[in-house]
Amino acid sequence: MKKNIFAGVVLLLTVLIAGSVVADTSSIDGKLIALDAGHGGDYTGGYNINYYVAEKDVNLSVVYSLKSKLESAGATVVLTREGDETILSRSERVDIAIAKCIEIANRECDILVSVHHNGSLDSDHNGTLTIYNEKQDVALAQSLHDTLVPLTGIDEGYLNGGYGITVYDHLISTLTEAYYITNDEEATTYLTGVEEEAGETGYFYLTGERIEEEANAQFQGIGNYFTAMENVAPSGKKKK
Image (cartoon, one colour):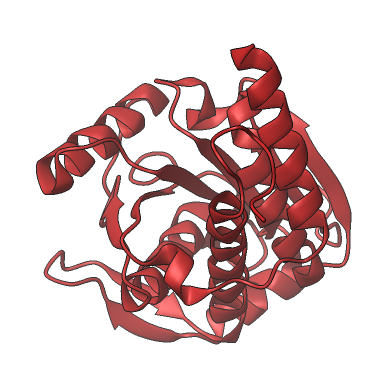
């Protein structure tokens, strides 16, 4: 019976999100959200060899912009990394998120979003990809995917697989690859950003038009997800 109820919830959320639910700021208010800026420190991630842009820096830029938007909407946000730290394993990232959520709110994070930007040997290639692991992650993955795809206009799908942080501790989570940082146009756009300091970390990151575009899309997708969740009754049926 529980499996049938859960399947109904996933199906309903898929329908709601596909129908372009408009994010309601109130749906984010009070939520506990963990954001993971992929890679960091010794792990650069994708790297644009023509413009010397490391994925790890772009990831953190998006995370800081998204954090600000979510907090303005009333969410509590924790970060797995706040500067250019080296985190040795993906499971450690999840452990950090869980520990911070418990420390701040004494409960599990509502969702965990890992922000990445893809890499390719083709400097012209671009596209948007979202990855999830468990059935419970489908609605979040699709919601974010739907709002991120317009950034590139190239849909590379939302995929099920044991990638990144999505395989650990059964948190509702997804991993986003909004675009390819190895794409030269993306790299040059990133470099036009303005330098900002990340709180008291001493770490500086760039923020600009492209970072804001993605952060807005991430924010919209998260809002759509929580709005859809509010329209689902415990039975898995849509609320009247």
